[in-house]
Image (cartoon, rainbow, N blue to C red; front, side, top):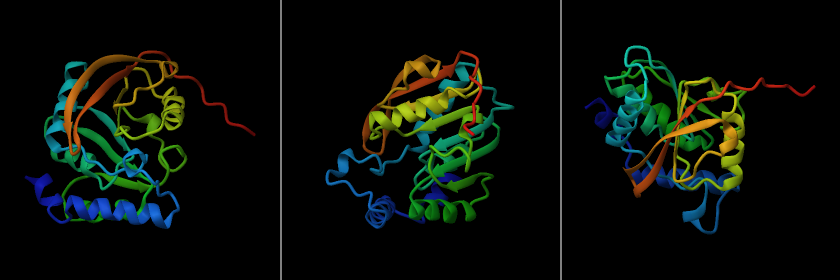
Length: 212
């Protein structure tokens, strides 16, 4: 498959090691790697397909699925998977990743594929570099994210449009984000099974008030 061919270039170990080197160079390393918000893990192609199928049962259009964002996209596995699948037609597919080595790997994989997508190297909390709050579907591999980061993500998610979907792992969105929980799934990931929360934005989005 196109996905498999793209990902044969770099092993899981190579990508994990690249993340560790970035953390060290950026002074973000954590003594306990298993609790670091930057712990590397991947969402397999089959799991991405399951997540999209779930969204399809809740109204995601296969012909016009809109814009897809993966926030904290790592080496780009989710973006490449979404671009490889044929059921849902997204007009834009983008991943946002803070660690430069993982972003570089994602770009190299993308350039060797025929997938129409893009990657941004930056913070998921800085929507000036990539405004994921405009996405119709946002996926967040949040298993190792601390509650403070989830609160910040939830705050930004309040600006998403009604009817948009948000999918996160292990850690839930704050109720204040204005989403309704559609499904709680138990799906397979590179590290094992994890709770997967599927939300839809139910309330009108709040206006962003820019500070002067």
